[in-house]
Image (cartoon, rainbow, N blue to C red; front, side, top):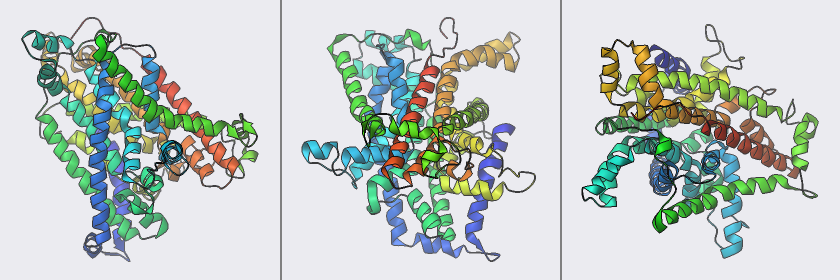
Length: 536
């Protein structure tokens, strides 16, 4: 427990407390009265209501659209499955400002819908909800599908033999087994949409604002740190309440499951209904995922002299970046890969220890997994500023060190490791561990020979998520990355912040490179298979 607890305390709780204290303590005196002033403001209540409403709606819509995809990826075997799984994960790591621009080209003035049917959805709630589904589709597919692929299908088949209908067998056998994974996916989607920033800014316009948007405006535009601190506390408290409720409800549904090799559960679709489901999921992926990504590729190739690689060639030299960079923009690719690799190691170590710990019952560790989810619900602006303010003097003088970037990225990756591994660890029959212990195995050997073979796939999925979110992390990295060592999202934001066709095209080119790097990395992880022998 010491490692994850120390990591959480030093690199999350301490920096966030430092920035909140800086906002509420003015002139050596605490200004707690500011909390009542901000919370009584009707504008704050409107922001809080919209933040909650759109997060609930986005989560429900994402589950409705993505759960069929989770079933298809878990139970069906079809050509290009690994590549398609990597493709659906790419939106999750794209900077929201880039994906928001792509959606604006599809849904806004002169976009695809406007040209075909004269329909515009920009500055509307529907544009926000669709963009949130675009970003979070992979969370449900990979989190729920990872466990679904390991459930023994013979349990449901036995229910069918005993007279249950297909729907009844799924509802009474499979759904209860999937409930912890579905709850974990819903929680992550809710947290990401609750703290949504880029999507609201680009597609919602001035009409809509979440707490995250309000914090940014108060901090960066109005320089009102006391108000920003109060809003951060409100956001933090709301997220903590959701996490506590989630931890309580999930434990009421936990049970040991019969897990098998996922390679033995997937099969080719049979019958018209299964083929229709497969083609329906492929159509959703094509319209919701592939089309916006295709817009990015098209814009990166559409140069001033026609289609070509003009924008890509301009990335090879700092002189062609309009004074935006000290180094060639392409160096951001190597920086992102190195930072993401280190952050993934941190996330796997901390998150793996936390997941192994919180699979157990007991007051000491109850809710510890929920505690580690708090970074997902905290403003990235608050975390970034907190790192700069808190970690600037001995013994934690890290402000000039490169390690700050992967540490900040690992904060976001740890929750994904925990939520991906925990349902599988809790599904393992504890009698297997007890039998190994009775036969003389040490705790380490029990973990290595019983738990690890069963959770090997979950570890690969968790590593993929941690690596992906580290590649695309922007909110905190933009404050911490040095000017001569930018990451891909930071480089894209710099280009988008400058006017001109060349810089915009270079931003689209870097976005396409980020998309390809992410897809290639995830595809490589898809090919990793943990050796298994037999069923468990």
